[in-house]
Length: 146
Image 1 (tube, helix red, strand yellow):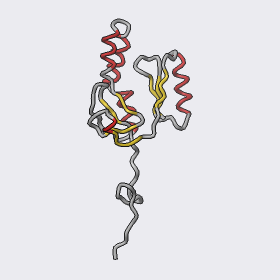
Image 2: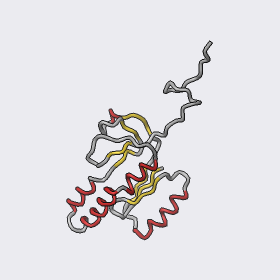
Image 3: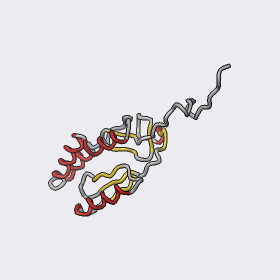
Image 4: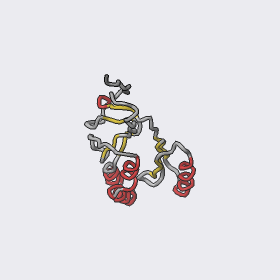
C-alpha cells in the first residue's frame, strides 16, 4: 500500500518543498501597469539601486531638478518601483490584482542632510531586520525595506 504524505496549502509535501519568499511586485517604471516577477532579493536590490537605467535616470533627475522641475518629474517616472507590502498578479496595480502579502515594510525618510545619510546607512544596516537600504532619487532622503 502506498504511503500518504502530508501536504501543505499548495498541495505539495512540505518536507520536499522549500517555501519560496514572497517578494514585492516590481514595475519597470512608475507608469508601467504590468509587474515582473523577481527571483530573489539580490535581483530586487540590483534593479532598484544599481542597474544602468536607474543610474542614468537618477543622474538625469538630479541635474534637471535644478533647471526644469517638470522634466525632472518625467525622468523620475521612468524609474522602477515596487509594491513593498504586497505581491500583485502582474497585470495591474489594482486591489483586485492582489496575490499575496509580503510582510515587508518600507520606511521613507525625506529631507535628510546628505552628510548624515552615510552614518544612518551604517546604523540601519546593523539592524537585523534591514533587508535593503537605498538613497532616494533626490539624494536628500532614503528608504529602508524591512
